[in-house]
Image (cartoon, rainbow over all chains, first blue to last red; front, side, top):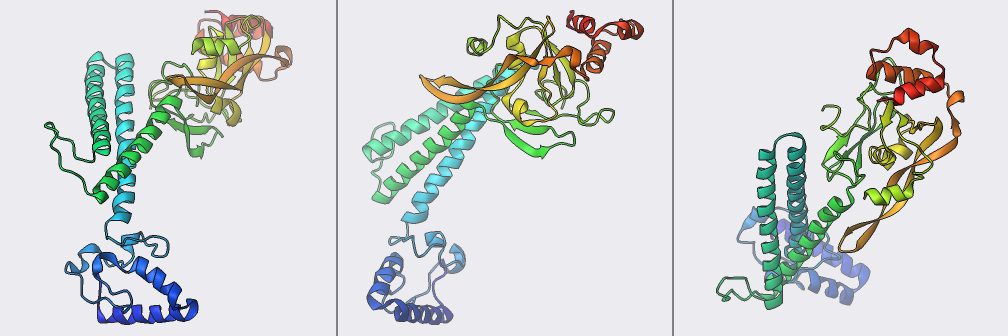
Length: 254
Length: 135
């Protein structure tokens, strides 16, 4: 992250003086202490950056990036906590959601392949899904072990002890994994459908069910989508056998 | 799942097979459960062109509707969901349905092409329905 230049020194000093005038010195000091002590690279009372960041612009040009562009509400006194914990949570949630969704797609694809394509594809997808599920379960167990013991998992039980920040990141990551994985799992349990592109020219709702749904329809159990094919001879209706009730691509073509 | 849905229906009063009008014409279902499972609640209450009504083998009017149900997902956890049920609809009268004849004729023409159109044109609407419901 960039820290100082002569220009920034002036800007920060002017800014500091301005808010000190408005809010009073004591209140400003509280905020400055919270926001300006990251890794000791800036002197809070002097309101200047005493030296240039050795990595220069490698960290980006945004001075507030370290608090997620919210210097008023977020603090990062050690230069580690805000993005590391929050980022860890978000990253794990997104990854876990995508991972669980991918496993679910493999499972449903296996079922679909067994039903409408070939058992060979079904076996391949099922084996992959089982392996992916086992790996996911292992990683979850590893995270729980780390959280319980405060040290990294290793086969010999001699894993490295985590620092406080690393432990916090690990906890945030595990929480993110549970949230993301839970969201995907909930999707598969409930099987919601999402409307896409509104309605077609026949006024039919077009939609996609990425997790399949649970109506009991044999094709509806698998990921599918619905769209009608407007019938030019009968405005407002679909062509025969091409209605929005078809579970594509299993029924009614693509 | 099948039991859950069948409990919501009036199975002893609707007599399959059932003909239901949809956005792509008439469809015939061999049982109440199949008719319910072939439709989704989002279609029944959102799509205006999705007719969702029809007749059973005694020409009684039936209509698809949406019902709130509780469904077990895993380990005893239940979620609120919506299911489709088929109900008798006394207000749906075959003799007064202006679209039924054309739709049923199209269905028969598609499913039973061997039957002559001239013969079908002479049949009353109830006989047409019986013909459509025939396997």
